[in-house]
Image (cartoon, rainbow, N blue to C red; front, top):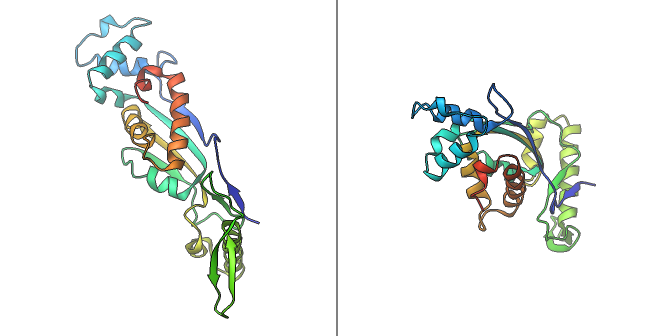
Length: 220
């Protein structure tokens, strides 16, 4: 039986790396060193000047300076629909689980958290005239059987994947600079964003606000 992922409140992200400068573990220091190039004011850098400088830059709207540092995040157990939206953010680098090479015989599919996968809602008209009422779970199980059947018949994954649903589970790693992450958060945590990407990005935003609040604490 295919596995249904509701992901209600689940953490679907993992921060893999946040770029820091050579002098320490504070990512704001790298932004400050780069940013003070414009003012030729690196002589004013102190052990605790980075946060104040970066906040000043951000409040003035000079967000280009934030492009000098970056963050890498892994998203897992998200749908292909999620990743289709994510990769539209072009100022980033991505590496994604490949359905061309990965065998998907054991389906995992993301469903809206407020839907019941076993509720029989849809009546299908079969070729022999028989009508059959099926649930989301039934349909995904049939999809899984079809995929497995094609694989056993000799179809390679890149051919058999043509019948996979957009809700199939995926994994993707994304690297982007801080300015682009701010853009992503503003769009994808908005009330009208798709429920899945909004949930995932809201959870990620909460975490990065704790790690580097000066960069992100004015969002939401």
